[in-house]
Every structure is written in C-alpha cells, then in structure tokens.
Image (cartoon, rainbow, N blue to C red):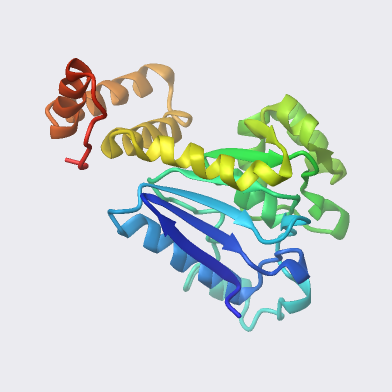
Length: 258
C-alpha cells in the first residue's frame, strides 16, 4: 500500500501521509513519496494550491520512523561534502502555497514539516512538540530556525529546551497555527480555504509567497524595494488586466497565470 496518498480536485492537490498504524511516521519510502508529490505540485500548472494532512484521527505525523531508520552507510563528512545531507523538509522550497491540516500529533519531524508549510489549521485534539532534546539530539530539519521566527525566541526556547508538548489552544495563542477546527471539519475547511486561494491570480499568489519568505531575511528597506520590483513585474500581466476588468463587470475573474 502506498505510504502517501495524492489526489487533485479542481486546482487543489491533497497529499495524505498514509501510515496511521505508525502514527504517520516518515520512513525512507514515505519521504521519497512526499518529495515526488511536492515535485508534481510544483511542476503541474493545473495545480495552484496544496493541502497536506495525515491519515486517521490520531496523528498528522510523529516525525521520523526510528524503527525503520537504518544506521548511515557512510560518514557524515562523505555525506555533507558529497551528495548532501540536507533534509527535504529543511530545504522545502515550493512557490505554490501549502496548507497543513494537522489532524493529531505533530511531533519532531512532523512538526518541522508543518512549520515548512504556509498556513496551518489544526483539529482541537492536536498536540505539538519537538522532543529531540529528550533523546540526545536536536530538531535537524528546520525546527530550531523556523520555530523562533514564527512564535518568538522565548516561547520557542521553552518548547525546544524542554521538549514538552503544547495543545491546540496554546499553539493558536502563540501563532503557531491560524485556526482550530473541529476534527470532522478539518480537511474540508483546509480544502475550501485552498480553493479560495486557488481562485486568485496564480502569479500574484506565488509572488506574495516569495516576498514573504524572502523578506523575512532582509532589512525592511531592502524588502520594500523588492516588493516594488515584484509589483512592477506583475503590473502588465494579463491577469492584472483581467482582474480589473472582472471587477468593473461585476463577474468572477478568469485567471490564466500570464
């Protein structure tokens, strides 16, 4: 049975980590399948937005599957200076928006995967944690870097240094997630939100994601200059003209990504 489900409805792709018997932990096969899904989302023009979730109602993902993680076959130096050692989660770079529907535990690499997404919705029973410090390691797929940027250094350090879990209400208070949704409505809410985003001008959506992502690393004046440059690039697109025309004609716009 495939460890990752993939479906497309309209302009929205839904990716489901499908190992509920292992709390949707990510083994080598699952990681490779997720890479393939992300590549497909990025390259297929008909897909404009993606939803990422886990199968079942217990876990989004418990992170790396330690039971199926073999010892490395080569030295770290050989990996780092050879084929590279960077996790696909740490380096996840896709310009189309990804909405994460967190349907239970999001722990370790599972939370790091959620952090790499753009919008996070969570079921009321969801729990979040980066427990790596409790087993003698660190979050190595972006956790120590994305979490402080998202919720602030003090709250991030509290989670990282204790390894303790927080519930959905606390995650909402910290700004780790955008909404708490009843579990039965979670996937539908995420897909409806994705469809609303997909109905917008695709070049504008991708430009906004790139600006937000890049701008966080830049001084404000440089980020604003980049914003003006991107605004100029979009000024003469067909979609911008279509949007203004549709507004005047009081109809839904027909965006084509040009």
